[in-house]
Amino acid sequence: MASQMEFDLTERILLHLESCEEVDTLHLAQQFGIEHQKIVGAMKSIQAHGELLKAEALTHKSLQLTDEGQSVALHGSHEAIIYAAVPDEGGIAQADLLASGGCNAKLGFSKAMSQGWLWLDKSVQPPLIRRRVANIVDHVQEQLLQLQLAGGEAQLSAPDVTDYKKRKLLQELSIKSFRLSKGPEFATTLTKLETDLTMDMLATGQWQQLKFKAYNFDALGASPMRGQLHPLLKVRTEFRQIFLEMGFSEMATNNYVEASFWNFDALFQPQQHPARDAHDTFFIKQPAQCGELPEDYVRRVQTVHSVGGYGSLGYGYEWQLAEAQKNLLRTHTTAVSARILFQLANRAGGFKPAKYFSIDKVFRNETLDATHLAEFHQVEGVIADVGLTLGDLIGTLHEFFCKLGITRLEFKPAYNPYTEPSMEIFCYHPGLAKWIEVGNSGVFRPELLLPMGLPKDVNVIAWGLSLERPTMIKYGINNIRDLVGPKVDLKMVEDGPICRLDHV
Ligand code: PHE
Image 1 (cartoon, helix red, strand yellow):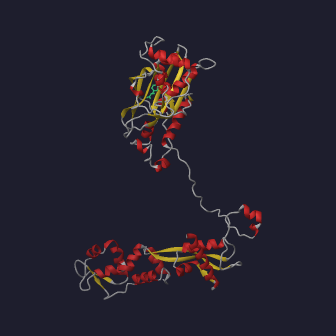
Image 2 (cartoon, protein in one colour):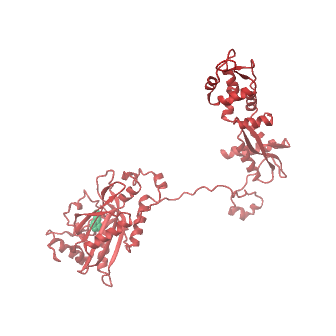
Image 3 (cartoon, helix red, strand yellow):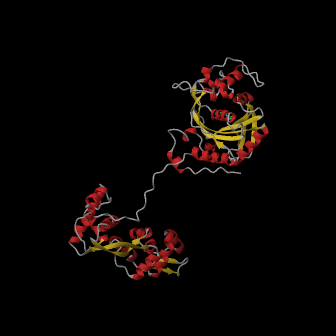
């Protein structure tokens, strides 16, 4: 539709030129009742077809009334207003006159005096301003009105123009237009220009007859659509960077579906533990059971749960393989840590100290509220080495959180089935001016490490935190639904700044 209108306009211009020698684009705009800019646009598209017309650039100067000039054209000049304020019989004190005439009274007064319209009678006390002439002609108003009616092209004397410009009643505009005349390839219709050179055109040789549209190297490029990183991914990048700086390797977390065995049993979490209930965990219906598990290791896990061993009494219950085989959506990334520790224990070259991390999604059958969803991300760090202590864990946590810009940490004893001792991690948030819980940590239990086959003197320290919490704090988001899910404002994702944690 738009291009059809444009096409019509180009033909109208060409038809117009056919019957006259030359025409100014400004006059065309007036005559056609179309914006000048559109005429110039049409002229340019005609030019793209070849030398159909000649266009000579012109500059017109035009006078335009300022807002104040328009008010003078409507109500009269400042001096005329002052003159009108002086009673035709008697007089008025100068101070009263000035007070009556608004903000331009002073200027109006001095102009009216110099025009000889008023005089100061000092023969009376106080002296009075009186009219000298019975009536006046307001030239300023008349000239401005004429100028307004003539669209800025009325004849004004040069001194008047200078004076009115000085009084800020007029401003000069320069308008650029083009004088159009016929060019050597003048025609009244345009052949459509090709924009693409196709394989067909080349094969048939048709390209030789066609006219191609010239490249417009001045055209502004359309900004390309591009993906944007979600705030969670931006914060994840920062966490990953910190772990890498500290010499950790990333664990493969690409399995949302996990066997209960790795998620719970391997971590010495008893089978009757409430977290293993369908109220807390999403179990998978199909396939409901996991694939193969390492047989010997499963037996050792069974033993340690049911009767104990490695110096532990165990839980004293009948451990069921069927329960361990249930598939679920992993409830924590510690399931991945269990798999990798088992691999480390059974490594071909024997045990080697290792530092691992992971940042990925976990799932819990939670009651949803402003800060909880049924899926979220966990950040987890694990270190396995000979003789590690709780002191190592505390030191490592200080270093880790320091890199996040968090320098004040406190620890609170806690309980996890798989760590002993266990500590909740609290940090002081200066922005929120309070202590907030940021994570959970501990030293893995021997009941977990020894059945895997890790040497007796090897300890494993680990900690975990959510990715959502620091992201919400960093990006000032109060409701988890503004960060994750169908209500997320894509503009927030698009405009969100990159994440820079204030490393210390
Ligand atoms: N898995 C724990 C959780 O889900 C976090 C944790 C990881 C605790 C490692 C101790 C050691 O909260």
